[in-house]
Structures are given as C-alpha cells and as structure tokens.
Image (cartoon, rainbow, N blue to C red):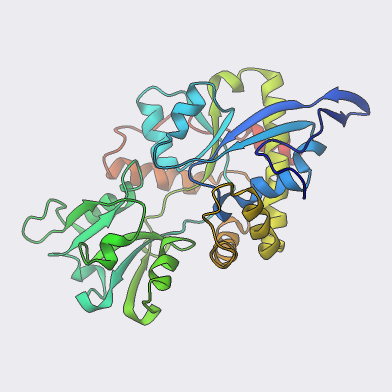
Length: 326
C-alpha cells in the first residue's frame, strides 16, 4: 500500500455513472482514536469502496479532547460516529443531529469487577465504588443503578459512582472495585496487565437488558434537507457497510488495514486483531438500518439516566439506509 493518508487514495477524478466526474468530498469524524472499532471505514477507504461510489472520503480520528458533535456542527465533518445517549443529549440541547445508520447492532459495554472484592451479582454492589467514563457513557450505569434502587451518591445501601479516565488504571490500582470496560478494548487491557478471566467478574449490559445503541452514524438536519447531500450520504453508508461486512469476514486483514492508518504507532497487531474479532460480533447481522425497538429501549434508558427529559422527535431517519440498501 502506498502513501497512507487519511483521505481517499490519490485519485482526483472518479469514474462514476460512466463519465469522468470529480469525486464528492466527504469527511467522517470518529468517536475515538484509530483502532479496529472503526475498521469498516478504513477498509472501505483502503479497498476503494468509497471510490467506487464516487466519493473522496477523509477520516478524522477522535480523542479525549475531541467532541465529534462540535466538529460536525462546526463544519469540520459531514458525518460523525457517536453513541446514541450522547447524541440524544446533544439534540435535546439544540444540536440538530440525526442518526442515519446503525452499523453496530449490539453493545460491547461491560462492568468489570475484581473478584477479590466479592461482587458476584448486582446484589453485591452496595457499599462499593464503580468507576465509569462520562460524556454520555455513564448513562447506562446510572440507569441500571436506578432500576436496582441503589443511590449513587455513596449513601447507605447505595454505591459510589466515580468518574474515571478512558483506561483501567483505577481498577488495577484498586481505586474502584468495578470499572466500565468494552468487550473489545479495556477488558483486554486488564488481561494484558497480568490478571486472568478467573480474577474478574464481568457484567455485560446486553445481558442486563440495559444496553444502548453504540457507534451510529450521524449528520445534520441541514444536510438531510439537501437532495444532493442525501445522495452522497446514501453512497457513503452503502460503501461503509460494504467495508464492515468485509471486515467481519476478514477480521485479521481488517486489523492490518487499521494498523496501516494508525499514524501514532500506538496500536499493536495483537490488540487490534483481538479487538476486531470482538467488534465483528457487534456488527454481525446489521445492514446499517437502525432497529427501532433498540432505539426506543435506548431512549428510555437515557431518560432514566437523567440525560434527556423527554422522548426525542426526528432523532433518526431510515431515508439514507433505504436509499443505500436499494
């Protein structure tokens, strides 16, 4: 592979519709750094799936200091990857953002506890400190504790919820007894730190019935009101889902593609291949179309968690996936 950039491969002109035509530019803002969590997009870029749709796509990595919704609203991206709770919260605060596709069908969110603290079921949570990320990632945990009837302020009969950074250091250093992890990332950081699965007790949010939709694609209402933009978005989603299906079928190769685009050099082959194997479980069965039952469940959990106050209107559309799939 030659000259890795975060734009489409070096074709200034795409042949689309039988005529030479300048490729339509499009920028995707990721939720986090370059890793297999976003493999489908890098695969679509590397394998020319975007080019085949007449698109010149740029992928912008995220990070702890990057708010995708601000990038999107500021015109720095045409599409962003985000979790539904944070997107709903932004929309309720006035951000006119809409879910146009949902590549992730399942949630990878977990709560991982050290077995030595004798937390074997949710009944054992009271009196313990649970660490979680914020910025919308905390909502399922607060909702879960609410369903269980546990106060979250450390009072008697309840738990203490502590904000932690996007790593597992607080768990390893025993500042918290349990910590938020993803099936494809932080859980394996705990294992790589020297612990074994037998040292841990894991609660998957999917199993607890409190999972919310993760890693959806979002754009603005303004773009959705423009037929030309709708056409571009449909082509983008079609190529992206082709990338995701390829990644599912070729997980190791997909991880290698991701590594080629990791300009920081921070990722390892072992971790990315392991991550891609877990990510494939989350995108399995998805054609990109949002499941409305999962959306409704996510809305209720987000409301119970206190991040939104009312059910949203117009927060998703099937128009783009309908065009992409047809």
